[in-house]
Length: 113
Image 1 (cartoon, rainbow, N blue to C red):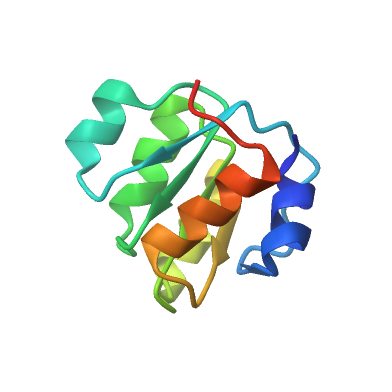
Image 2 (cartoon, one colour):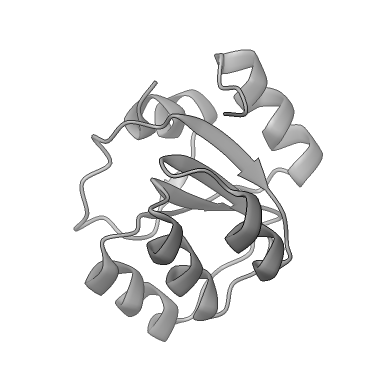
């Protein structure tokens, strides 16, 4: 599956439109604890979180994640988006709750790696 399919399938809003979302997604990871993501997320996964601060980009870049999906209408600030572009980490948003969004990702065929 690729990120473009996820964006289309879930009607996500891409907050980093200058970045390509034509990239493979090999799994998913859900957590709001940065240390948990650093310790357990697999490279190529898409990360679902409600965190919106600058450090999410650093963690996603460190782990080689394919992108970040923010839930509950959470909007990152300009510094976070700027860093995401610099680090080539797409950020998408959704009005859905974490539970609903992850259920829909599963229905699309995405699995944990």
